[in-house]
Amino acid sequence: MNSDLKIISLLLSYPDEELQQSGNLIRATLDQLSDLDASEIVGLKSLVSAISDRDIYEVQEDYVLLFDRTRSLSLHLFEHVYGENRDRGQAMVDLKDMYDEAGFEIDVHEMPDYLPMFLEFLSTRSDEEARHLLGETLHIISAIRQRLQKRGSVYAAAFVALESLSGERADEALTAEIVNRKEDDPNDLEALDRIWEEEAITFGGNQGENDCGPDRLQRRIRAQHRDASTQI
Image (cartoon, rainbow, N blue to C red; front, side, top):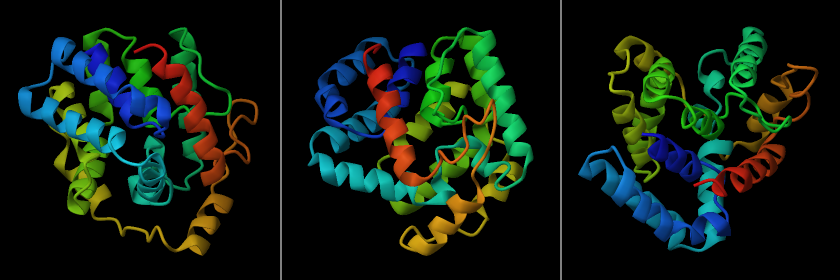
């Protein structure tokens, strides 16, 4: 399970040339170590190919359009729970405290609820603990999966795999609550700018202050991926 979580963490990170060049290694690891069933492995391999076999700039553009400019597909988990609520800041602190207690260090500029980071953390825990924590986010993961499938995105395979690894079914009411929210238009840049201006979050000694806009987010994703990809 740990290798699956690490692989999905990488595949959901901002794609770069290093990730593209890791395609064969990721496929081999899935063949040798995965706890997923055959169809789920095929889905992840399709995602690997979609990242590895295309022009890197096209891959990056697709990623940004999906996850950075589409709020309803945000890879920041608490976006789907708290939105603009001030409780989001305390939730960030609590999650970071959990990382600290486990000896899991994160980049001070990265938000603790960034899904690839959360999955990287889970890959360091026991299967039992990883499934429990993954289960707590399952309604968010399921909602994002449904939205990606609606768009015909190959990235949905990563979320299908996460649902399988949890060993549980997402709460249908909580999932529906997220899915039924109005989706934003990723091409409405003025609206996107307003969202980022309104949602600057301060937590843990101002670590998040003025550091959650799309451009800054992309830089943080690249840095996180460089650290994580050396451990696969």
